[in-house]
Length: 152
Image (cartoon, rainbow, N blue to C red; front, side, top):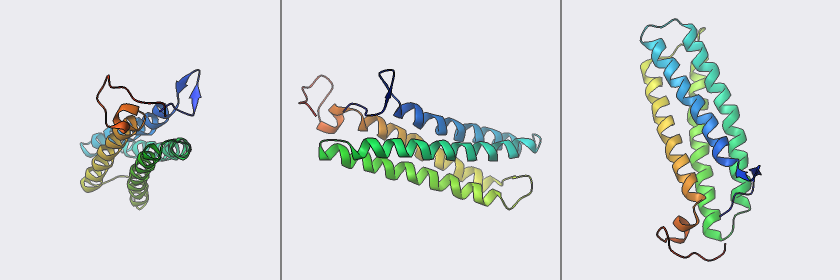
C-alpha cells in the first residue's frame, strides 16, 4: 500500500511517528538521570519533552488516521485502525503521566511513574512496528517476501 501523505516522494508517516517516540525516549533518559541524582531541572525538562511528544503524537495520529481512512482493501483499513488504537493507547499513557507529574512543583517523578513510562515507550515501539507492517502490502496479503501481490 502506498502512503497517501508524501513529501518529495517519500512517506511522511514514518517521520511523524518517530518524532514523538524519540521525544518520549529522551524524556525517559532525563527522568532516569533525575532519579539517579542529577539536578531537578532534568525532571522539568523530561516533563516538557513529554508535552512536546504528545503534541507531535497528535499530529502523527491525524496523519495515520487519514491514511487508514483512505486505505483499500478493507483488510488494510482494519489494520490501519488497529494501528490508530495502539497509537492512541500510547498517547493516553503519556498524557496520564504528564497529569500525574503536575502535582509536584518541579515535575519530579517517582520510580513507579518511570516504569509506566518504559511500558508506554515499549507500546510505542510495538505500535511503530505494527504501523510498518500496515504499509507492507505483502504482510497484509499474508504472503512472503518475493510473492506476487495484486494491485491494491
